[in-house]
Image (cartoon, rainbow, N blue to C red; front, top):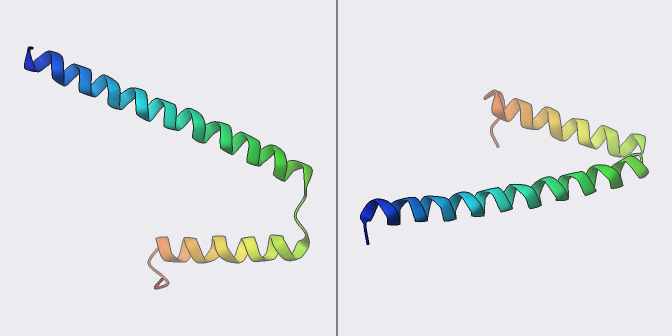
Length: 66
């Protein structure tokens, strides 16, 4: 077998795997969004979520050590 053929075959298989992974990830995300839309968060949950987001932003910006 030609090495270029094998290389292309391997790349194609990897791309198929990545595409399938992303399809599944998108589907899970859509289901989660639909579920969250049906169950609005309480004020306490929103506050906790905002605290987590603020902490993540601070970590990304180097303002806080994890």
